[in-house]
Length: 349
Image (tube, rainbow, N blue to C red):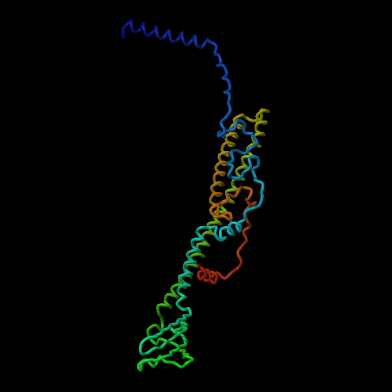
C-alpha cells in the first residue's frame, strides 16, 4: 500500500469521526404533533360508528320487522305452526296441493265414467209398415240393469205387435194389451270372471286410490317442509335477538371502560380492543339479520293469505322460545312400525 493511499484513508476516517461528534452534540427536537383528522358527514350506507356508545343497535332492514332501539323485539300476535299448516292445507292456497287434488279429481271423473257402464239402460224401438200386403206396427220397450257380479244382467220389457204379419213373422204378433217379459243374462265362460267393463272399473278404482295416496303424501311432504321452515325462522329470529343483546352489552361495557380509561385505571388499548369487539358484533348482527330475512322468505312459501299471496312474518310474530320437549309415551314399537308402514301413502301409491 502506498503512502498516498494511507493518506486518503486517514482523511476519510477523520471526517467520519467529526460528523459523528457533531450529530451527538446537536439537541434532538420532537416532531410537531399531527392534527387529528377531521371526520366529515358519513354517507347513509356507511355503517361505521364514530362513537361506539351509540344507543341504537345497528342497521336494520325494513322488511325484517325489527326495532332499532331494542334487542328483544316486542311481541304481538304470535305465529304458531298450526296457523301455518292451516293456511297451507286450505283449499286453493297451496298450488302444489291443488295440483295433486286436481289429479285426484280427474281420477274420480274416470271412475264415474267407468261406473256408467253399469247404469240402468232403457231402450224403446218402434216400427210401422202402413203400405204393402202386410200392414202392421210394433213397439218394443226394454229396461236392462247390468251388474258387476259375474257379468250378470237383469232385464224386463214390454212389446206390442198389431196388424198383419207374414207366416214366418208371427212371433211378432201380440195380444191387444201387449206382452210383458223379464229375464236374466249370465255368461258361463267368456265374460264371466272378468270383462271389459269390470276391468275398466277396477282400474279406475285403483287409480283413485293411487292419486289419493299421492295427494296425502304431498300433503305430508309440504307439512314437513313448512314445519322445517317455521322452526328455522324461529331459530333465526331468536339467534338475532341474542346477537343484538350481545351488541347491547358491548355498548354498556364500553361506557364503563371509557370511564376507567379517563381515570387512568386502564390503558387506552383496552378501549380500542373493545371497539374492535363492537364492530365484530355489529357484523354478527347484520349477518343474523340477513339469515332471519332469508328464513322469513322461505316461510312465506308456505304461509299465505286467502288469495294465495305469500306473507312475510315479522319479528313481532316470533314465539318467546322453543316448546318444551316431553318424553315420548311408552308404546309398542313393533306395532307402531307396522301401523306406520301400512298407513304410509307413498308406499300405498
